[in-house]
Image (tube, rainbow, N blue to C red; front, top):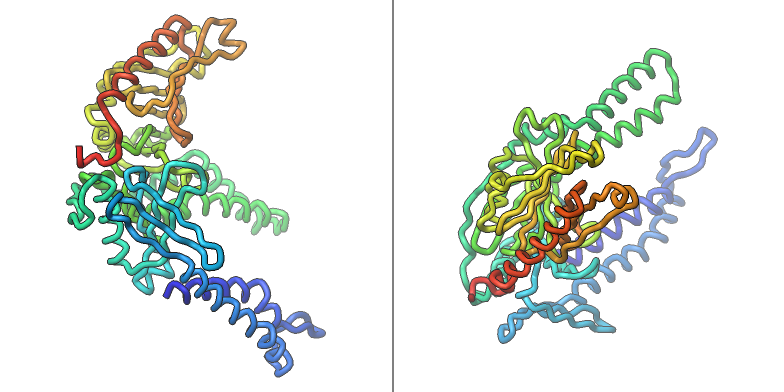
Length: 428
């Protein structure tokens, strides 16, 4: 079925771009679909070679991919190519995440794609498409077990459900955002203006606002529908998706930083969105996998943070406000630390609480722009790998900022000495 699906995809693209226009004929009344013998013959003459090429390409892509697990070294070995072969050997102890993805078309044939995320850039993803649904889940369980240092035949670890996002609450949270409400009002007024004055130029405004609503409401609703999060010994397990379903597993120690986001209208309901920076994701994959929890009560997000960073209690960390002489936008900011995490709160209309464990800090630095130098203020950055959550405390007195840098650097060094390598965690 892999070869057939690949060929079908190629043929669909061909038909939309070239095949269907071949069936159209210019008449005196305009362009029409007339299936005359000449038109059908023209369509077949062009389409038959494309059909053969699609079948060959589908078979070629299927035959060109082979993989196996090296039991001696616990490496995933992937071979690609027929004429020019390429072999990649991936140590499973360095795997960042393993996803089982089922696009809508593959779900019809009980197929799934296994994606193995590695530390690195945009070319660090290994896609094994397609496998049977049960075979994909078994492969995922075996790779996770070997990555943890266990035998490959180890049964899949049990999981403990944390939260399931209600569909109605998810829809309400997407609507209760100031940009979405503003776009919705503009769409309604434009529609009323169009029908009242028959002004054709308003069609442009309608189309743009409709695209904005699709991007802001419909797209995330389809992506995060049926969202569930659970904890297991092999990491955080996520399941979500309406058309394309995804089962994602983040092994322990792979989440680098956490952000709790509260838009202004969400605070009355106590809702929080949980963003994360995950080592190994890059580019588009980072953007698609940056949400660990699209919607949850704050206490659920705080509890999940404590599971990701063992020993952390976000609400128990005292936050010191920014300097009273800092910019007005930074007066509501706060920063604090304990022996486990560094916490920063910022934002007026959209409040963010960014958290990073000392063991995950890549570096600690102090920056000053010209205005800050004049006011003897500084910004402290506790750096994680590139991602949506970047922890920085702005508007700190210079002496306080230097003390934070020295203290955080020392705690990060001590935490790294005791945390150890996140790979093969179950064998330690």
